[in-house]
Image (tube, rainbow, N blue to C red):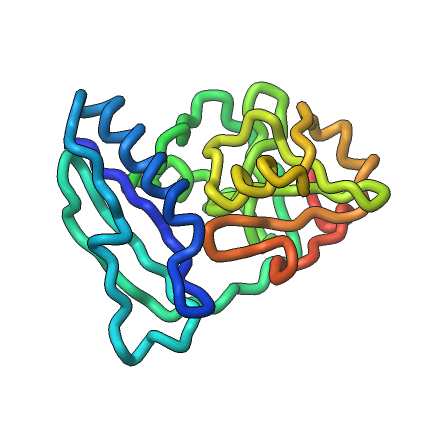
Length: 199
């Protein structure tokens, strides 16, 4: 049976963007398992007392039902460089628990910190995050990411990020790239100069 995950950020005493996680979780379950009673993750989550003042990565593993919930104190790992890798067949349109395809690509990063995946000629995501690119005080994201993250979805809703079809040939138009996911915001993302993206 396919298993999936939701990675939810607990920060400043509450779970962030929980309604978007609920939406994605229930949409995934409906797609793979048919009509199911909707899950409300906020009713299932409870931060351990020793973590209530921390930033916590909450990982919910599920199939038809919720299978496991884990809580880990979170710290952003430094990312200073990216290696472009191409894979036109990778599919991560749902947040699968099985990340073997991504892990296989990550091993191609050589001496760089992470990968930037190109699919069908378009720049998409790193091994674990969406990407946004800065040009003249405007942030742009790939219109067709491998996976639509909840933070990227929120930024698009708020108009903080503009979607565009971005190719490797467009990189020179930008000054920097940042990575965003459930745990990493624009403000606390590592800043990666465009020159640190290696072809």
